[in-house]
Length: 277
Ligand code: KIV
Image: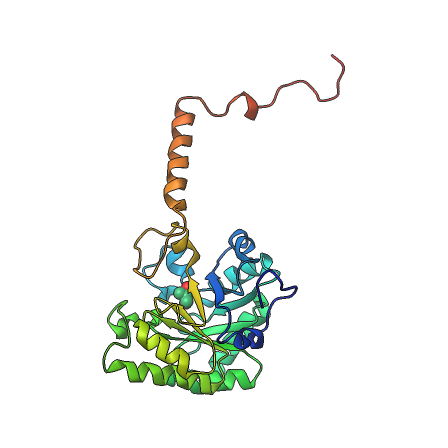
């Protein structure tokens, strides 16, 4: 299935069926214009809880709320017609128990029209994933570096090196067996990502993982050079919109101070249109 040939948004099962085929393309989005820009090019679009850091200036994703996810989810939904919408469950909205996870996942789907939710965690979340899937909520899992757990992971480190590889592989297998339709692998060694991709029967979506994953995802503001607070090694900058934007703002400020803006083409005369002279 190619993004351009598609007439309607794919379902989670369509994404699952892309395992081993043409790589699945995905990006995050938080606003309508950004969603419109990527709709024809992505198989799915994720309203990531990275919105907290990228758009709201939060120091981590931990402060992101359900209300923020609903608002940004609705904005992104307005911009999509052919890519599937997946929405992140924010920190604290699902870890307490299966019922809490169902209640919040159902709200996210009902209020945004998302086709699936994403949540972080492997073996520890398998039971919750099975509970959600059995009740009509498609789940994308997220293992490896799970940013909602930075305080227990000791920061934004590569996960699964050395002896830790087996546990990470077990996490991916557990979420696949629990019924997740895809799993994000974040910041894991390339060989481990390839090994997991071969071992699980659902698509792996890499971010800082391997070109051998079944798909890739990036935070859109990172790849467009709009988020410049830091740049992770796994980010490829396809544009430098942050620099371009700042240069444009500086030029505007100079023009205003020098009374070069507005120019004659930006102002209105006092002649009434259509009136005889
Ligand atoms: O929140 C997010 O943007 C994510 C992606 C990095 C996978 O979870």
